[in-house]
Image (cartoon, rainbow, N blue to C red; front, side, top):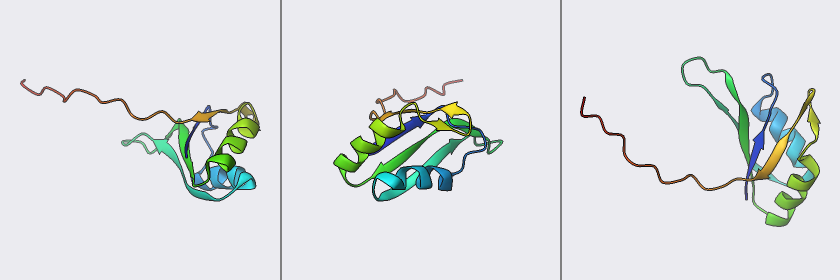
Length: 90
């Protein structure tokens, strides 16, 4: 199960996400999305948990929970929308 985690503190790390979600089960992967040029956090990330039941418990418990002074927005991640190819005619 892929879980979206938004409103992350700028100082949060991948390990912070892993630690927070591992309380609810096995975390396969946790990653915070960063801007390419600066490497600065975009304020959201994703957590992958193998067991859907554990993932749902984590979503329920972590949504709205405070992390370093910010209430998290946590829900099941939606699949990426198909985007049209970029037109580079210019």
